[in-house]
Amino acid sequence: MPKALLVITTCPNLREAEKISKILVQKRLAACVQSSGPIKSFYRWKGKVEKAKEIQVFIKTTPKQLKSLIRQIRALHSFDLPQIISIPISGGLKGYLDWIVRETR
Picture (cartoon, rainbow, N blue to C red):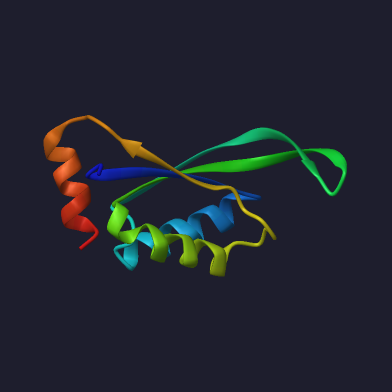
């Protein structure tokens, strides 16, 4: 099992991205959250191809916190079905990965 995870979501605006980011770090569900954008997203929703500007959010956490982190994002997010995907971090600077684990205890 990986020591750390990268979780990616998108938000409709910077205000929502910052609100979610701050709460995740305050509750120790994430060690670090970074956002960038706006980005352009194209997706199919309710039978139509949609285009939207979104803020991309990168969340560093651990497998132990993943379920709680997903619940918290869902509770705060304005989208009916937000993108929430988790990618195992298979390598990196050991000290940084250890820091993620310490900050999410």
